[in-house]
Image (cartoon, each protein chain N blue to C red):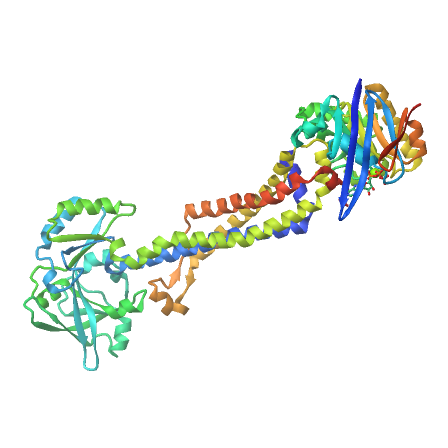
Length: 407
Length: 227
Ligand SMILES: Nc1ncnc2c1ncn2[C@@H]1O[C@H](COP(=O)(O)OP(=O)(O)OP(=O)(O)O)[C@@H](O)[C@H]1O
Ligand SMILES: [Mg+2]
């Protein structure tokens, strides 16, 4: 009877109730949807970062990260790979790479690039390059002269598939080594910068060119989902000689994305509060109006012996019902929108330049986080009841006589 | 035994700069089971006095005691409780809660008293039958005539057997025939259930029903007659 009565009271003024309800619905909907989009951006950025040659963790020779030169390469990768086999969970994958700065040039142009020597098979499982070929073919296991070039670099060099590209870099003895490759494949990446920066050859070809022997620059590891990365890292640090090798997680390797992730919760909070403040004013206003309109009724209730606390509770119950109905509809709408968007995503390519600068993907897919939804709903419910407490105490405080005299 | 005792009650309203004396040194007692009319011209303080006796408002000075409870020392919650169990109200108009049916309005007081549903329903119907509203239990106030609404109000005021019913011009909005009917019901309840009734009125016919007549004039007690 209690809830039923509150429900009847709410619908005494259909228009006003509809207004609050719509405000709550839009509020909740925008909170959840925008939260999911921000999470989606973060997820896209990190996925992007990890697949762009980062992986979940990397192993380098000490000093390589400060000075990625040929001198700080790892001469004995076999020993590290043995350790990996022992320490990593079964479904982990890794790729060994040679990675040095080089100058690429053809007849007309030259440009600084990063030369990446890869093992085509294992690399395809670890980074984006295996699926990124848009024209031509991927590298073969033994492909001494083949090179993969990004579409943007190809444009810049005004060259095309099958043409020659010369790479120059310092070899282990400090001399300039150069070698000509044939462009066998063109790749596309999420970001133009990636297409311009990296060229890929086979690892043996790069080792030969640079006089590296079996040496490599880095090992990039992809772990199975939900692995405790920090536990793996400390296990690896124990297994490898500390004075020779360094192990870093993607959080250290992708400082920008990590920072974004750290402030994201704050952003979402602020957004929730902004939405709520707008909504809260509406709730207070309309509830106050509703309370004043029923002043005589509250006076009557008090005259009949209703305790002031009961009146407070009655008004709060009405607010609760309003908030609750709005929340349910708002959540349903938010999930529907997210469901629809998760199929197509939001295409940001129109403003790709700006988005790319921030390391964002071209297409954002919203990502639902249970914690955000809980947060949005509890903010609306708790703060909503809190701001309704003001009109409710007003109602409870009406002196019965004044309230009854009010016409 | 006295159900109501008023001693030197004063009440002044502040209207802007002007002080309006509504009650001036009013003292009287009302014995249990009385059927009292409170008469006097408009503005003489009838409503003010009834509100004070019902604990809806507080006096500036003087003591009011209902059934041995001195109001001066009671909190809002305690006063609410006293109203709930001992005092029934009937106002001139707007007595009923609009979103509730007649039966629910009558049940409401018992709901506050936490009386179980089945008993509530049964007692509400019985009392509505007594005031001649059998079969109109589920009508909302808007679907009842003025006289019927006042009868629902009387039913609600007496349903939980209060010690006293305060009625402020209960018949003012009714034609004389309907008003008479309402007074008959009040009188019947007074005699059958020993409930004390105090009602204010301008109406000569209504005064004739009372067994005691208290007359107010400019906030002072002008006359007190037992017939
Ligand atoms: N809330 C108030 N504020 C200011 N003055 C008031 C208030 N209530 C009553 N008064 C004044 O107090 C005096 C007594 O009023 P009260 O309502 O008790 O008279 P009454 O006898 O009930 O009159 P009526 O027969 O018209 O109902 C009047 O002069 C009235 O104007
Ligand atoms: Mg009056």
